[in-house]
Length: 165
Image (tube, rainbow, N blue to C red):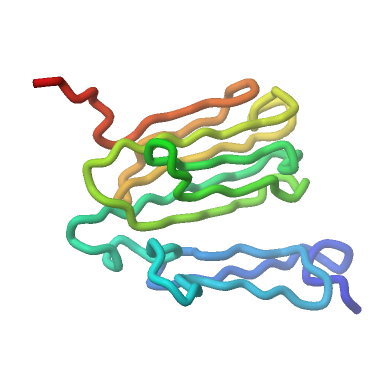
C-alpha cells in the first residue's frame, strides 16, 4: 500500500543492531527504505556506526543520541574537532520522540565540541515535547541535555588550553 509500518495502519517500527549497538530505528517510510550501516565509502574514512571494540587502540568511540521533541525539523547538531566537522545530523522528521544515533571513532585526547541548534528557539524540552540528547565516549555518558533556547555547545575530551614554552 505504500504506507510503511507507521502510523495509519498501526504503530510498527524496526531496529537494526550491530554487535549490540543500535544503528537504525525506523517507523515512517512509504514502500521501502534503504539504510547504509558502517563505512560504505570506497576510501578509508572514520569508522561510523560501530562499537568501541572496532576502534583502534589510539581511538575512542563517540556516540551522539538524540530524542526529538515534536518538531524535529527545527533541530540540527554537529560534532567538531577544531574547525573540522566530524559528524552532523538533522533537520529531522516532525514526529514526537523519535530517536537518532550516530557514532564514530576519533583519536584519543582530542577536544571535541558538540553544538545542538533549535531554529525556533525553544530547545528540545519541554514546551514542544520531552526531547533530549546525550554524548558518550567509549560508552561513558559525558553530557545529557534537554533545556536550552536556540543552541547549546558542549566541549568534551582534552580541552585544556596548551601552555606556551
